[in-house]
Image (cartoon, rainbow, N blue to C red; front, side, top):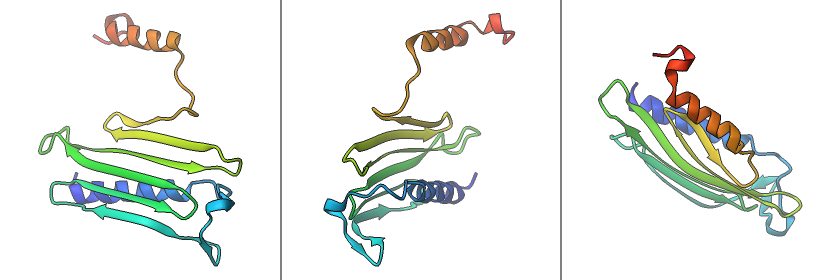
Length: 140
């Protein structure tokens, strides 16, 4: 897939993620509004570069922060895939800070955050067993 198309898709996904933040995530103590618009207080970006890499970061007037770096893995092969690593954080009306770190690659979107549910250890062991014994699952 063309690296420019991949980069564009990641950028659109990032913008969609930002737009999906709950509209009531506002901390009145640090609000920087003008006509109901929240200002961007810091912003940086690089790319997309010819090798498919890019990076961006920003912080808004109400404390939302996000950053992401991306690059192509396995360039020039059938397994070529974009990998993005990043994080974002925001504060809700009660002052709770939510932080998410993630990797997105050929294995899907893999978020981590203290507020996100995790896979129980018993399920993890079962999944590991299934992966280690494909012959028992008709996958030889």
